[in-house]
Image (cartoon, rainbow, N blue to C red; front, top):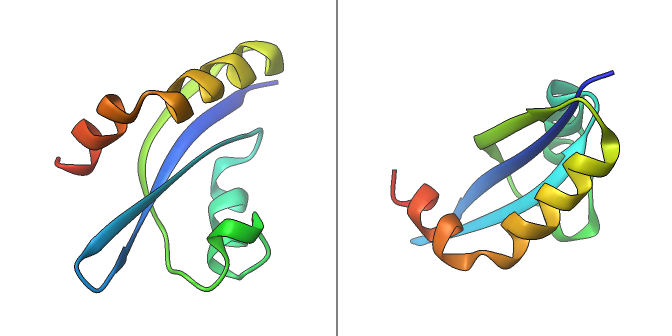
Length: 81
């Protein structure tokens, strides 16, 4: 089974907000975020997929998610693209 670590972005007025997560069904997960059924933080916003990576194990995906969440410079770089 494949797992994905992803970053989604939402624009609220002039501010860009990002969210990082992991899933085994990327398209379904983004749809849930946009339908207000994702993580509590993501509710009420419209999200676009900005970045993702694919992994063969859940543990590897979870570890990478943790690294990306903490790496604010990497996230800023992606937001500027």
